[in-house]
Amino acid sequence: MIDEPDENQKTDVFRQIAQDATYTAHTLAERYGLSEGQARSLIKIHGPSREKLDRIVAAQPFP
Image (tube, rainbow, N blue to C red; front, side):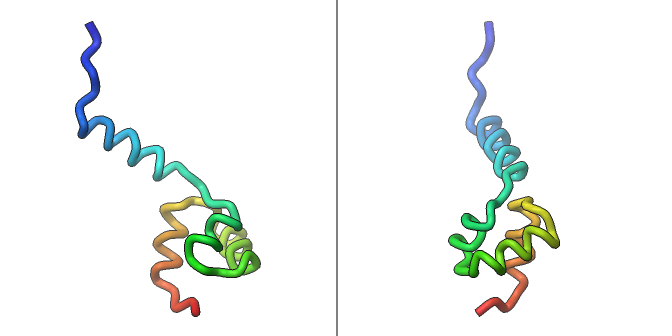
């Protein structure tokens, strides 16, 4: 018999999915109030990883 995953296991799965997620220029720009050009530049330089871009954008003094 297979046991149902507990809440911690479900959270771990969702966390892994979120870490593997990527941004498009549109979603990155919308989330952080950037122009799509700024978002495209960030993705081109750093790649589309949500985890990485979230850290980079949080550390930048964008207007």
